[in-house]
Image (tube, rainbow, N blue to C red):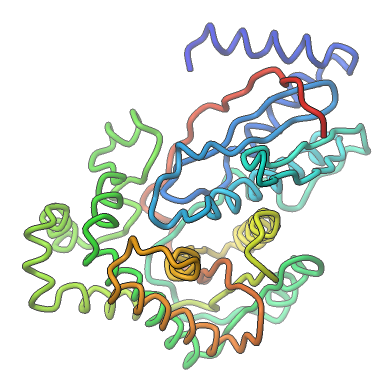
Length: 376
């Protein structure tokens, strides 16, 4: 965004919020910017904001998220839920109370929420600093356990809404890790998924800084020989030949061993696949991630199988039949290990102690506009 657009955006905010205290325009910009520090699938950042008197509308941008993982835009609903959670925390830090009315409907699925701002007592929020520190960490984790205090604090993030499950015993984490890594087998074998994945990798620092979307090759934490192999893997004919001698299965096995390292595996469970439930899952997921960060721990999302299951469950035939079977079987086994009798497995992740990640994903500047003529 150029300097002229920034000036215009501030003028818009001052006009729209003119009856509020004179600092509110800066506060609104800060709250929105904090929102955009939320995680999103493939760092697609699928959000836009409209500002009116005392409220901020949050919109999903479906054109940003065209991944095969994004059946029904559910990953983007999770991402926008995380945006709302960040905004609520930043609002409290700035002396406001944010109350969000979640709004997606079949007739207007991209209007995620209207967030109302009211003056409140300003107080430091314990998770505020973590908004700016949070990052995906794909390194192997050290096998140090969660303390009882850490475990209880994480479970308290889910006192209402979606269910949070934390698995700490080694045997179950190993089984979960192996099942979740089957995502990589499908990714390496399916031509369409392969094309999307490799097109979203930024291979140089310059490309990463220029695009501000997708993810740097550095974030995969690959050792030099494997990183060199990735340059070959992006050519599907070569990858298909290597898969014929077991590469995709070997990658899944290796990653499964990495995924089970750490302190715990986590899962977020919602009652059904309604869009509002995925927004709620996103809010909980961000609370968990920020809490993990505040503890000096790290987190890696591991949710390919649960997201692909949305596609398979609805009878979509984009995936080859054998890959759809892998996904369905892995999902069923995940549910069994997690002891789920009902509900939908919305998201999974691992947490633990690790060295700092090698790179962090950049952010686009917020897309902020005056509110349109809508009612909420």
